[in-house]
Amino acid sequence: MQSATHQAIATVWRLECAKIVAAVARLVRDVGLAEELAQDALVAALEHWPASGVPDNPGAWLMTTAKNRALDRLRRDKVLQAKLEQIGHDLDAQEALIAPDFVDSLDEARADAIGDDLLRVIFTACHPVLPTDSRVALTLKLLAGLTTHEIARAYLVPEPTIAQRIVRAKRTLSEARVPFELPRGDALGERLASVLEVVYLVFNEGYTTTAGADWMRPALCDEALRLGRMLAGLAPGAPEVHGLVALMELQASRAKAREDTAGRPVLLLEQDRARWDRLLIRRGLAALDRAQVLGGARGRYALQAAIAACHARANTAQETDWHRICALYDQLAQVAPSPVVELNRAVAVGMAAGPAAGLELVDALAGDRALRNYQWLPSVRGDLLARLGRTEEACAEFGRAAALAGNMRERELLLERVQALRRR
Image (cartoon, helix red, strand yellow):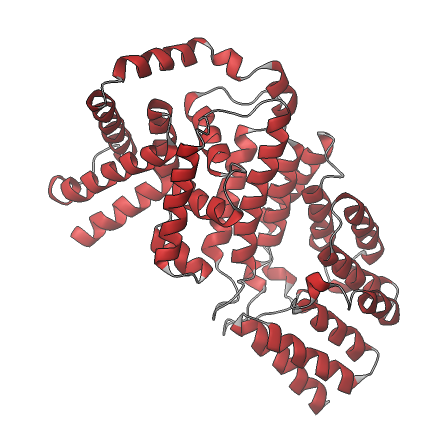
């Protein structure tokens, strides 16, 4: 019975933690302190619920307990009156918080208190004053409800390292006096880009794990999708938010087909498309349409989503519109130029115009320092060489890629390709 209660507490906490932290942060004006007070409410639940039973409304119980802890803290610090006056000003100025310049950027963001507070927490946790790894850790802790142990396991980093990142992040936000507010004007675009970057980093780590024994970590993909959908609901007029949601929905739709029954990777062109999740595809295409209607068709995430949509709309690998994908990569290279984009463009060219054309583009990237230890460069080159019948060269490239791969499943896949070529 106790284990069932603990499981119920964990489930409720995962669902409610972000709203609780957001509501408490509105009272204390400090996300670090708010997270600690919310954790106090969780501890109280762990102490009381096994004996008294799970309340009828467990989320409300946790919320009330956390707010009471916050009020106790404010009374203890002898600043309750000042904080209440500040809250009163906030309520009176509700419309001012959604000022014209903010509305222009987010197009009538929801004004409900919980939504407003959640959006503030997201923007605070992803403030540019923090390094990217700290933003990721703090976001997962505050908004995804993951424990320090879960975050450390996901990123294959020692748990004390993650704990230090989170502590330093909260201290940095406090010392820098980062306001618990929605950014406005020019700051909005800068902060929104930071938020989207962190969410997509989390998704990518789940979609293809950097290192370790797992090809994917679906829980991280799920958390990133949850945060993305939350942002889309809170910022319905921001096209890049919808572009990112579209991209994640479409990529996540392939998850079940990306592994075989033994957990080994299955490449895109070899996947059983009947296993692709049609609901996620429909959601992704709808989000992409929304981004385009809002004028964000040339956003970096919307363009990547449009590429993913080309795959989603093809019933078979042979029906893929590679010429369209090449054109989209051309646009992406202008909007968000990077060696990785160029490498992906070379793959598309290799499919649309033949492996020789793709290989020419890949060879032009060979000297790029940013790709020096990027396993997908020799992997792509190996695939193009194999299609040209240059088997020995292809084997050498796949072997080099395997040596660079940090993910065990990925390494095994590359070595299997070497063996398959040699058998052939």
